[in-house]
Length: 156
Image (tube, rainbow, N blue to C red):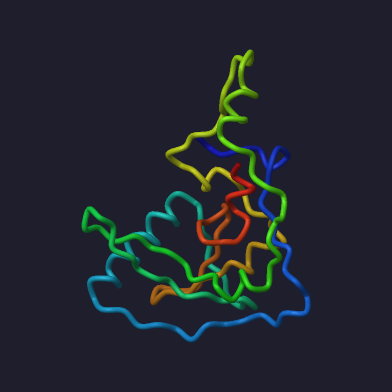
């Protein structure tokens, strides 16, 4: 699925201006982890989910987490950025209420749950705030990544 039209939904950050941007000190990785995130970066570049950035104000590190299958998962440490963003206090609806609300409708969902968050575009004004660093370069997501505060509410 190519993505959801940004006129329908787009993820925006509400960064508190009282917080100063943070550039995290670059972490070094063992060769196995480094090769794993280089492959993931190549995959994200080919899918056009990320783009290179040169002078970001916010910069986070990549964290490699081993999956149960033994493969590596690339995550981004948005801890500092999440501290600068207020939590969306609107409660998520209960799943049983969502299912009940769909009765009588022909279409339950128009989202591809396999692609998940990557179908939702980031607000272009906020893209550089979600920059991350690797040995290959500095990048930012064009789509909503995992790990940001309030992404669950936007996806819901």
